[in-house]
Amino acid sequence: MCGVLALARAAAPGVRFEVRPEQIELHTTTPHSREARIACGVALLNVRLALQSHGIRPLVTLLPGQSAAGAAVAVRLGGCQEPGPDVLALLHASRAPRRAGAAPPEPAAWRGLLSRAAEVERAWLHVEDDELVLCTFARGAAAEIRAGQAMQRVLLTAGTAGVAVSPAQDLMSLSALRADLRPRLGNVLVPQVVLRLGAG
Image 1 (spheres, rainbow, N blue to C red):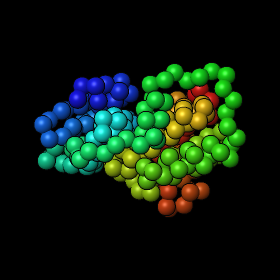
Image 2 (spheres, helix red, strand yellow):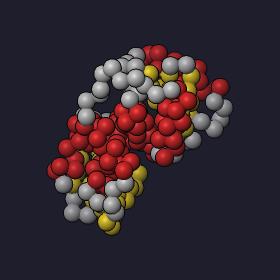
Image 3 (cartoon, rainbow, N blue to C red):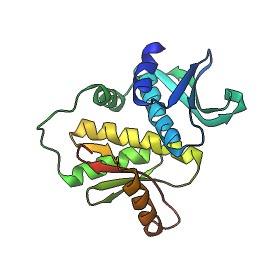
Image 4 (cartoon, rainbow, N blue to C red):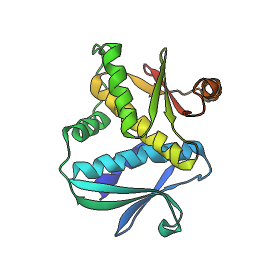
């Protein structure tokens, strides 16, 4: 189990892991922070991929409450399931250094690829110039955890396609962009994370 958690821990410094006989629990060190919940989602996807790579089907419960000592996420170990090629490709992308000098695919190809990656995690990718905005269909803690999973899947999928994508680092512009996009997206989509094409 230690090997399963190594990747997740490295990618989520704000997340604490509790390994119990029946499940793995993910706790946020600052439970009222949306950034911490998004980081928890990143760690959760890594845990899911790592378990799947070992032939274990993860059974995920978001915000399980007191049944998991207030954890943000509980992951139980399901039955056996052979990992698919998509799982192995994402794990390889998470461990391999980015290749320099590779020609990126055409925009039409990677946009569809990254959009599908977001949709797998019940999120929506809004493309605007050189910015990608990950949106969820609801607000709240569970939606922010889903946004973290979607962000990580999009980043890893971009790595498999040779597309450089990174989270926006300027928190002020990030907040302003989210506020600017909200009315244009209507009442259905909630902007959660801004990604930029390139190294950030």
